[in-house]
Amino acid sequence: MEAVQNLPPHEQQEFMKTLEQMQMKDSLTMYNNLVERCFDQCVSSFRSKTLDKSEATCVENCSGRFIKMTQRVGLRFAEQQALQQKRAADAAAAAAK
Image 1 (cartoon, one colour):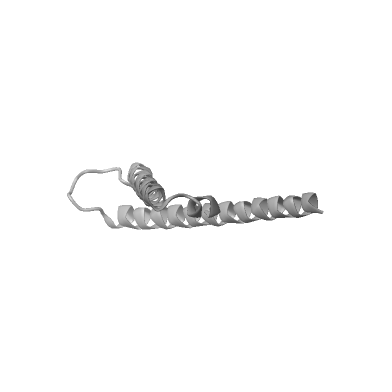
Image 2: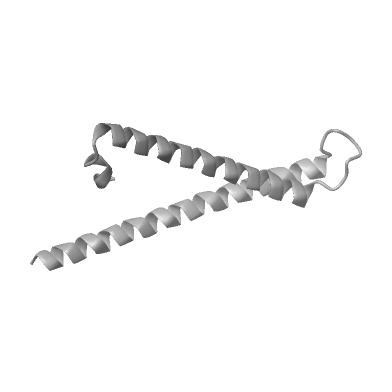
């Protein structure tokens, strides 16, 4: 994000707008994947317009697992990013000596 701070203000605004749009698109994609996966896995009958108890339980469990997995992947990604930044900073410090 340091590079963004070096941009002119109008380009910073455009960058942030684009970043927000990408984040919104990613959120919607994740939500759609969750709905599709859990619906396909859990809903098997269309006898009524509401889910029966076993289908509702399955959807709750499926969505809970999906959200936990997504959070875990996000944490691991953040850890890897921090590790790479630390390595880059260490390499830059070593090169400066």
